[in-house]
Length: 182
Image (tube, rainbow, N blue to C red; front, side, top):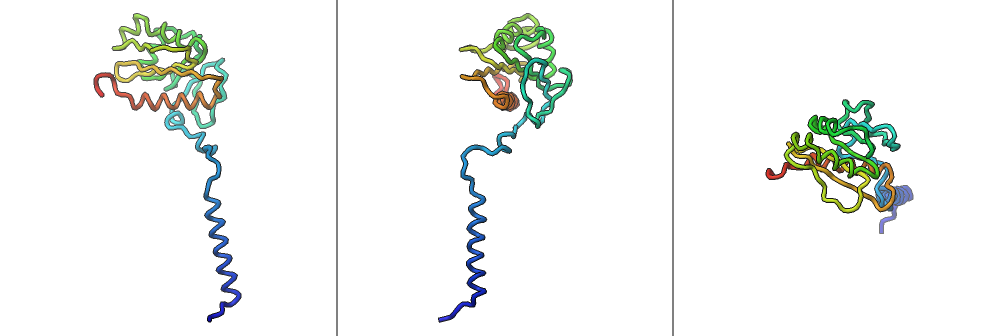
């Protein structure tokens, strides 16, 4: 029977323990996404965003904001915005995405969409099938069509939840195909 020198025994035991600890440290015990995963956006972190005064969101640091609506790809406006239908049509025809936030989001959206200016600019009415009262309405163009998305929450969403929803809307709009062409 071969006897192992003391040095080999210590080396073998130490290697085994180091390997076991290294393997355990790579396991994640928490099923929640990490902070890094939570902060990842698919599209919003590459989009110039204008958030109107009075919205009151804490904007995630990875979101690029601009100070003027004309510099934005996504405009986040209060539901009682002073922007009229002509302005909304101009933004949409410039391929910008509009988001209305607040209790009157759907009412403002419908006012815009039922206008003659809107009917002259787009092939569809941009109407929503409405149930409840959404706090967030997001709309953008796909070809000559306006595609609206509406969101409501059971309780007040966090600012991060709203920005995740905006990101999802941008991704959905990017993947949309104009009706009749899909």
